[in-house]
Amino acid sequence: MMTAKELFENYGTQKVQDIRTALDRNNINASGRLSASVQSVYTENTTTYRIQVMALAYIGTVDVGRGATKNSTGEFKVQDIESWIIAKRIAIPAGKTLRQLAYAIYVSINRRGTNQYRSRQRNIIRDAIDLGLQPFLDDVANMGIDIFLIELAKWQRL
Picture (cartoon, one colour):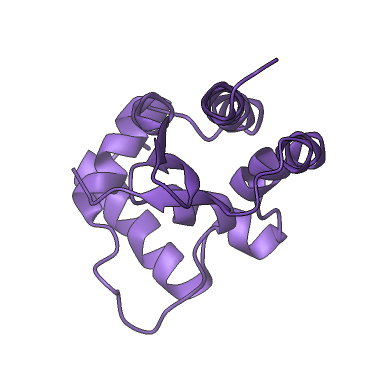
């Protein structure tokens, strides 16, 4: 029979794989940094079992997109968009520089939000977390575990 530790670690490992698959399937893994950052950590104490699935802080924006704002929140910078353009190998229009293209995208996101947000294609990561959740919960209940925590944690910006 599987131990509680094995059950939670296996679930965490599966969630990491499910999230990485979701990122690839939805073509939102340009540089691979976010996918590479996803990991799970199991901890326990005398009263609680805990599995954390962690990733870079911008995973929340990837999950739901970003709505329009009147002023930038400082959530991302033009340099981040430049890196994204390079990673995605987006062609820079003739007569424009990388900086100009990145700034135009930045302004568009601030005015209109991201395509993902506008299309309402949301919860890509949450759906990956929920995938296979019920069988896991059944196994937890069958083991007689009463207190446990599943957490999607975000790291600070690297």
